[in-house]
Every structure is written in structure tokens, then in C-alpha cells.
Length: 78
Picture (cartoon, rainbow, N blue to C red):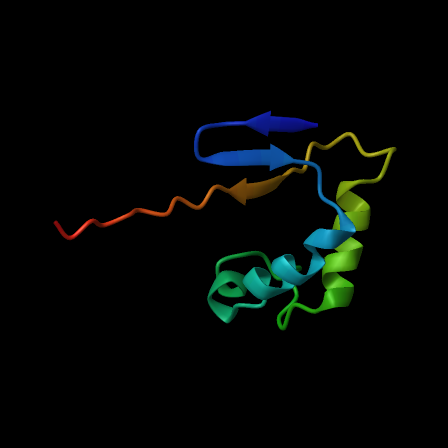
């Protein structure tokens, strides 16, 4: 599944998302705002487990990755 908006794409998770997920989820400030079940530190194994669960064919939940579009602003000195 893929949902495209002007500033982001919502899509299915994939194993290629593991490094990015670990990078952003391994943050104590994030873990502090979530339930006790959220691991901290957040490891590649945690990301693998989450993505496997999120993409499980038998799951009745819709869990999508958010890919944010990066806009580069050009400044012209002129």
C-alpha cells in the first residue's frame, strides 16, 4: 500500500527501513513518552521484530512507514 501526499508518502514497511528506524527510535526521549514495552536502547533486532509484525500477512492492523519528502530551498543572492 502507498498513500502519497504533497509532503510525505505512507507506505508498507520493508527490511530496508531497519537502519532508519533504529536511528530515529533509539532516542531516550522517545522511549520516555511511550509505554514500558518500547525498548531502550532500540536495536536492529527490535526493528526487525517490529517490521516483521507490521508486515505479517495475518495482521488486522494497518501499520505504515512515513517517508517525509525533503524540500531543498534555494536561496539566490541577487
